[in-house]
Length: 323
Ligand code: DGY
Image (tube, rainbow, N blue to C red; front, top):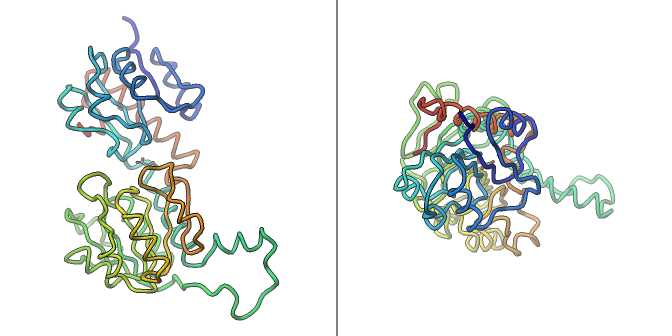
């Protein structure tokens, strides 16, 4: 029997590419160039499985490709707001993602941003690199203490809980959260966390607010001018979720006017485009969507896609079914 034909839309860790090559008739993206709408449509016409990632826009237009050969979208990434799930469902496609394996590293990065924004680490590094530093002094580059403060989480899924674990056990932080679908008590029993009645309650009480909710329609511009005004003037906003959860214009104004103190961003609406205004501001830390970007995690993510494909082509239920 011939092997299923698989296409991978971007370059993946070489260990995972090698594993895919051992089992499938696989087409790799050796140049790592993003695929166009037409190329993605062709992929759906020519391959049994298409393996996209979070930067590929798998729109209804892409999914309208005919005749359709693909039966599964094995997404490299936990988020799936880049895939039109209704259209995928309508075309009878199975969609899988890669949960769990990126939890620790994404939580680590949320803490990295929190610490960097609080302690002005990006600004400090630029200070040294530009040779502006004139030496230690009691009033130099004064920042915000992290230990013992209150961390407010919007969304309390796996990554939020892992960030809370680090914040609570590592930095003695008090944890508050809001999630419309709260986790079972046993999942947060070691956090001594307080569940709030709504986002507003979290925003009003937290010294640090970290976003961990899905992107897309349901949370579009959830953090807007009105909600930013509810935050404390000394508060710091961290976003490792999705860029479109935050209204950039509102955040830029809030950071400029001192409505909040600082922000740490790993994700952007319309990335890789980053609003020019952020680039000129010292009180925002900007990272290029690095949440899961460790060697170990990216290999594990690829292997999780591989596992889903193996199950699918063996006619078994996939492990990480989204659709
Ligand atoms: C995901 O998997 O959705 C992440 O954003 C990639 O780091």
